[in-house]
Length: 261
Image (cartoon, rainbow, N blue to C red):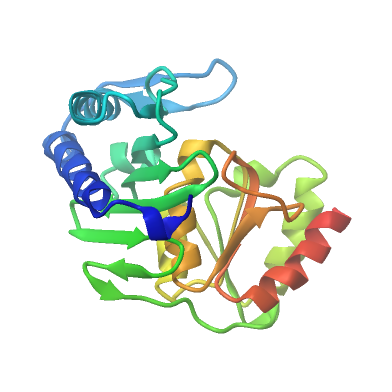
């Protein structure tokens, strides 16, 4: 199965899902909000907005496509009777969300049991919607392309947080890459990957991602002409240490450094 067999109704339904999520997230954004911590050893925030937005999307999926699977950050993994699985992250960038900064988004992917064949990143506050199917990508209906950048010294490199690179071997790798890149930027989560697809960022590097962090972004990046893999060059759809590049030449060069540690 490939993106040529993707029923058009699924894209329409993905739009319904992000609209349902937006009705929830915009109600809570920049409002007083109770924040829970999901982890004991570090701060991993979740809010009622996260939970309610995912619940709204899951409800629509169960009603419209009860045979489809669902993999989401805030709920149980549902294995469907059909090959299709919806992969949901209601608020990717919760730290930005609770800080009132619009560098967050709702992520929706549709996986055909082989790979994500449809991806949507919706930022309802700024009214930006990125959509990709691996062959093309768009922002609010306008086609987008990543930019050419063949050298790290010419590149803008983004990571979600330098805190993720404090321990070896990540620390030495981060020091090398950050010293060679033209510019470093931080704390944009899914938004950074979409800026890469838009041709404004060249590299995004993140360790320890989950499937729902990256699957929606893969068809967008690939559709814009970019590349996204694990640091060892493998398939990124299951998460792990992930690198995205707008230019395949730069991606090939950086894989050599990443594999060397």
